[in-house]
Amino acid sequence: MWARHNRIFLGSTSRPGLGSSIRQKVMILRTSFRSHTVLRQSLAGMALLALLSVPAGVSAQESQPLTIEADDSLEWNQTDGIYTATGNAIAIQGERKIAGNKLVATYDPDSEGRDIDEITATGAVTFVDTDIEAQGSKLIYTMKSDDYQVDGPDARVAGPRGTITADTRIILDTRADKTQEMKARGDALYRDADGRVFAGDSLDAIFDDTGSLVTIDAKGDVRVVTEGGREATSDAAIYNAVTEQAVLTGNVVVIDGESRMKGGRAEVDFKTGNSRMLSSGSGGRVSGVLVSN
Image (cartoon, rainbow, N blue to C red; front, side, top):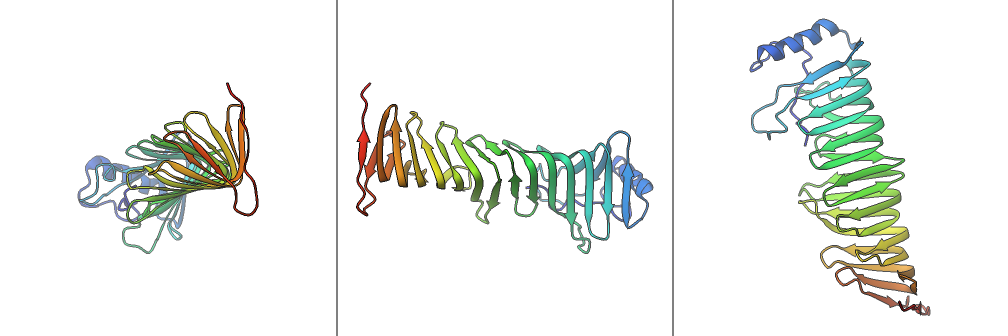
């Protein structure tokens, strides 16, 4: 999580525990911005805003300063608690980085610490956090909960265990127990590190506190592909990563090479690659066209 206790120097530059180099950087900001309610500075080169002062007890990455840089301008609205950076803007803290054509960081101006609550990036957005990479047209990052939303078109979130893409948006919510819920909308697709594919108009996935997939619920034009290349399509599917089995329902078609099986319900075992086709139970029949190699 980004350091929630990093503070922006809005008042005196004489803060305890700051070295002379940091103090000089803050003084330069105050000299440039003075004390206007809405502050703006345009720079020919790169504008830099350093958010410093971190309390004891935070992790190594969280204890590092958060900086916001931009090519064109930085605007500081003290009344509303808004920082706006435009022109190839970048927010960096340790290995975490949010970049876009424009960044807007907000905080509660009435709070004592004035900790950043949320960062919104727009325009050719990229997000990097250790082994996670994301990209899209817009990113909303919530500091306290470590949640974020990536908007499409071409929204993408990639990690060591898999990659998620969607045309509309991808939302990742982190729960109190550190498990995560992911929602992808609009031609969504999840491909895991083993090459398994789960696609549909919408995907809802649960990940455990280590980032491993637990379940995926896919709906609308669903497509499932096993490691061996066997493919199945349906109206809906639920995959259990613990048992490595998926249940597909509604207009199910299982494809293996030129062979086809059709029915109302199918069970796919990703361990063995075997499929079991069942009728819907409402009078429908199961059919198959089997082609030998």
